[in-house]
Image (cartoon, rainbow, N blue to C red; front, top):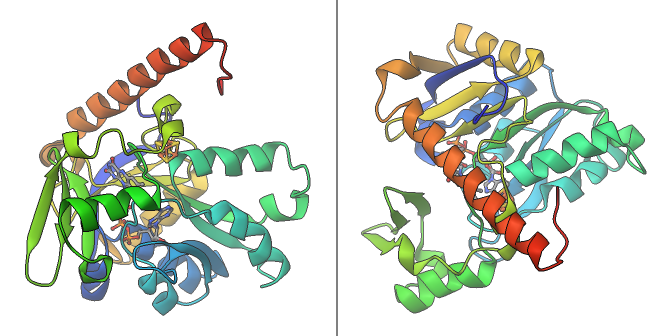
Length: 281
Ligand SMILES: Cc1cc2nc3c(=O)[nH]c(=O)nc-3n(C[C@H](O)[C@H](O)[C@H](O)COP(=O)(O)OP(=O)(O)OC[C@H]3O[C@@H](n4cnc5c(N)ncnc54)[C@H](O)[C@@H]3O)c2cc1C
Ligand code: SF4
């Protein structure tokens, strides 16, 4: 299945005005982790917090809604959230942990849960894994190239970055700048070329913007617990939802992009094998 196994797919957004303003898309990640905190489903969550340098995230343990909100928004570079999980358990004493992860991190976490070498008392504490879609990621120096060199801006002026509709979008307080994606190609992290997972297939709940209108997210519930937490949150009014069949561009685009990513990765993996290079599968 091109989108992995799942229970349901809907278009959704947070009903919280503050989250709507801070979030990248529909505020599903922040809203769902905040709901899980409030309900005692988790005691804290590892998220990509603001780092010392602008737009260079640092993993942090959020134990309040305000801390979750401070980490809202997409940073298009690595945030080694997985490294922080051990610290969250050992140093913060968290017994029920939530986290947000891109697909490769989601795979790492599931692997740690299945083969818990050295992380036996960490991996089993993860109670809610929210996965976000990811087509590719960039080293921080690539972001500096886009923002500083190509657009002539300072990193601290940037309020939001986004990828969509064939462009890399940069928002400042007064203006919107774009780069065609052909200008960002070649700056991606090399390892992303052999990544086959677009929609965080192993998460409890996966979410991303593709498929839904601006300000909304496409939400895929996958595990029993993920499905039930999301549905409880909808029931108490944390999220509003629309059937995915009723929104544009809809599921077709998500399926198309996911299939394209898999095909491209297969080709790159085959090419690596031919050259005798190591491959992940
Ligand atoms: C590198 C990257 C590539 C992406 N590519 C796509 C794509 O091709 N298509 C698509 O639909 N969506 C993509 N997304 C996901 C999308 O940008 C949003 O993150 C997602 O829709 C969640 O939005 P939200 O409003 O629910 O989250 P918010 O409520 O804004 O919360 C975002 C959460 O993501 C965490 N986060 C931010 N940056 C990172 C990071 N680098 N690594 C790990 N966690 C992070 C934050 O800590 C926060 O908890 C990508 C995200 C990343 C990080
Ligand atoms: S494309 Fe794959 S390997 Fe690259 S950052 Fe995204 S999930 Fe990770």
